[in-house]
Image 1 (cartoon, rainbow, N blue to C red):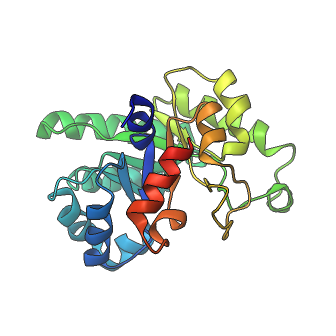
Image 2: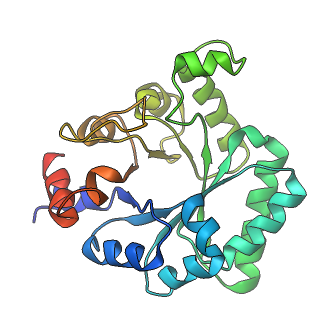
Length: 239
């Protein structure tokens, strides 16, 4: 396998859209070359922190995508609890504001230092990939999604976050706009042979990597395939 394919594999985070722990473990075992595995609200609400720990204790790198969004004091408590799960990466909503974001970072740094744990990456959610321009305007937000994502990225960077989650459609402008070391995590990725499902602002893996994405979040095109391992390999070979 050449270096390019190895590099591509380590950019792919597989979304395990399930609430079943055994299914999550089984799928992860077939995709051991992935950079990490995303678990979200569905899994967390069904299994709680203990369910996540079952996977992390197996050595899996978990992207804990709970999109935390609340007042700073509540976020502090949630962050302290999340650290004990030992995720590789986790999300907060940038729209929670500067105080919430700064509290998130100070809390996680303090907790990890006290417990001698490796600090998870904290990335901020900008505009959900299920939202298009019509939805954006219906929320009472003016202008373009691309401009809003840039504003949120600036806020996240200045608040100390490690990166941002944004649609591939905003990638080109954002990568040129933001610090080169600021991580960009991109969901809504679909290979040419994949279905759109409920994603509206989508792009192929090849396009997203060329435009500067550090990590690609891909779920159903891989996990919904008859042979997930083959689908993963096929996807990597196309980039």
